Length: 117
Length: 113
Image 1 (spheres, chains in turn brown, red):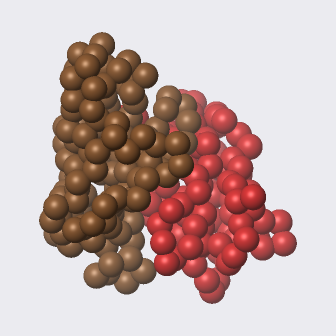
Image 2 (cartoon, rainbow over the protein chains, first blue to last red; image 1 turned 90 degrees about the vertical axis):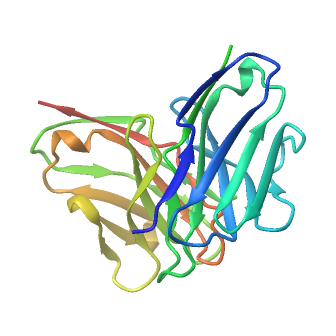
């Protein structure tokens, strides 16, 4: 079945550095991908919608310059956390709808645990 | 305002017992309803979804959910839980034409041996 692969699964970085998270659709094309942030014991918060070949759409309150999104191909979207700070530590999850399948099911990556020291 | 409420932050049930996780929603249009499960440190897996038709929906892993429009509810049930069902469960509502789902806060399911 369709799978979304997200890497890395876990990353630790120093404050001030940048971290890139990749989200790949493995056997379907994803013109749209979604990026979420999940705080401990809380629900998912949609950060942005990534669109292949165009600019991402950010949710209110999400800093565009802080969370850079690039969707350069039909199977890859990346989220770069720039100049990371400890408050950026969180669990980041991507998802993509498989529009080639009936009802366009939404597939999720396994998430990336970011820890900024 | 559009919202999803999962009243129970966590629920503890004995292995083999029945389970019901509650979900209430407030949504302006015809709701498309979802239940997802998240194992620790992992992404989300779709258990089941309701778009239209029969209000009792069967999902994977023996789960089912019933859409009750009059109560704005979409409760998840399982007749007999297994230890492997211990996880976080999320209810979500959205429209089929976009995937900007509105998520509940989740219910953590704890299984007693």
